[in-house]
Image (cartoon, rainbow, N blue to C red; front, side, top):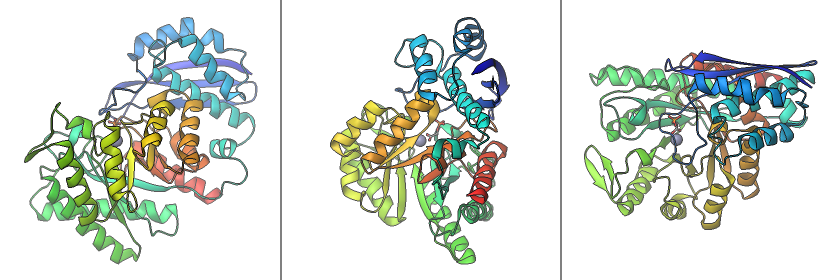
Length: 393
Ligand code: PGA
Ligand code: ZN
């Protein structure tokens, strides 16, 4: 039974305010914080400014949550939805909702003396997802860097998640070495990826070289992927790159070529967030050898995922709890994807805290990858939690 709920404003990794929730039940405690995006999809649940959202929640929302059974997650989330009353959670704010919803689950897990992954995933959970992380990035996450938002790596041949976490870190380090050799010393973007002033093909070549070197060194297969975040490139008629404008047709052909040239096993948001048809053309072309994953396309929303399933838009779904606002909705999105033979990738946001909940959700829900960067305090918090979870199971 929920006895007290405390909301506070804390810092995120970009230095912006975000919401943290402490929830106290008779015998449990749960804490969770909301992350935030920079390349947010237009169909995401709506965030409210932190100060006013906290004030409003303290007066109009929290009193209605006291006395609820934290063990009934569906009922708790239903209460959030019905008090809010809007489809996009714009009244209470998706940032408030997601922090409350996750804190509630953690309080219930703690009351049961269980870790969250075990409480949500059950007794038969026996493996964790592998980490998918970006080593070079640009787009909305860095100024004057690559057009493609994220150049990702995942050690598909690693023997376990721990080895995979260290393989990604080794690639990240090798990429730095190669960039310096190119005379491109550089800083990092919002998610800890290197953010050099280079074109996309140079980025591909650099990551490919780093992956080859570390694969040889560690004797494991390391694969490449990208998050195009194509809605950020779209300008109403074309995808605008520094060196080219591409029509939808050109874009589909271009991404298909990249998949083959660099053996990409993962491509996220190759097309803009409304182009279900373009997605399905690409999935038809390369979906047998590459995961085509919808982030801004699906925004973790079951109605949009269903729309994609109907025409075969993708074979993977990015899962971001704060895009949809509650754990119940997040779970339903995962279930819908899995039921229809799609993989799921649990994801961080570019603005993060040291909250580690997504490592637990990714394990509990059977996601194929945990996408959470490679280095940086707010990213390694989740990777290190993944290592701890793996040790336990
Ligand atoms: P965001 O980007 O968190 O800035 O929206 C991450 C992504 O596009 O996957
Ligand atoms: Zn994305």
